[in-house]
Length: 463
Image (tube, rainbow, N blue to C red):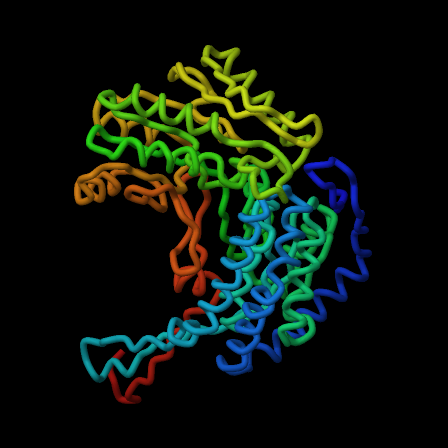
């Protein structure tokens, strides 16, 4: 795999990065293991100091970092700044909360003779983080912030089209005062990646990416008996019930589907609208998309950026063509499109019959699947008719009913009256083919620690 920066707006290749030699990979593993032996014994206060410094540096240099995001993956500059701030907030969250979240848990035993038992949470070693291009800083922050605060160390294999963002994160942690080897960025080949996973000093693997990549890496981790977490694809349902504020629901739907160019695992990809408000919603939704503006992602007037690459554009075109060939109705919204760049006009798909494979496909870009539901029960049925189970949302004025309906949706996250959010103080993760494990908060913090039982028992206690 070639690691290179190619500007999605100009399609010009900016810089190419070589993969390491096998000797350099070995050296990185040696360095990481040596760092772990020191870092696991540092105080929470010292770890917090480093994480807080990383947050401060991101905020102090927000323009510099954000421009790099826009350069490498075409993200709107305003959204790039929001991602940089979100990453800072994640570092800060663990600087403040990690010690409390990892405090030993005293177990209430039935008898004092059973002992005085507690669970302590201990770091384990090197973790491998395999991260995607759509949020080059946030995805890295949400794994390294909790794991560094727990005392683990991390080796990063980032997406091949964001190598400068990967290097910037390594430099950030160095500048924040992290010890050498505590966080390393590599540009490994596939064979080298397999070697890293198999190394006995690597104690876990965290991947965010496609189903295919997840299946491959999870199988390699399984063969090596390594714990892994998988944050994979999604096809979130956005349900609009008859009693919803349809105008606001439509606005949120336009945003929920098209932020980050529609290249988010938790984009609202399937609009499921109850019959009584379907026509009104569709009219408002179509008008909302038509008001989007394609253009230079650095221009504040641009609201729909290019896709991340020419390959992404061609892949999405093929998916839409396949959906149409199987009977779907394709409506392209005729936005004015620049004559350069990796742009894709928004598409609405309707008439997606049960037999159409597109119905259960993830479209990673501005393609909307639209469904008419007879009632709320039918809407839930359509929402669950998916191999994915990441996020989702329900729009209704009856918030308690919405929360009850949310219990029936088979996903890791459901929001009432809002598209799926990503925040520093909310957990993230899904079920089914969307993967397993959680990131952020205490759930993410404890994914790769050893929950060790220590029980002090009376020597004369019965067995």
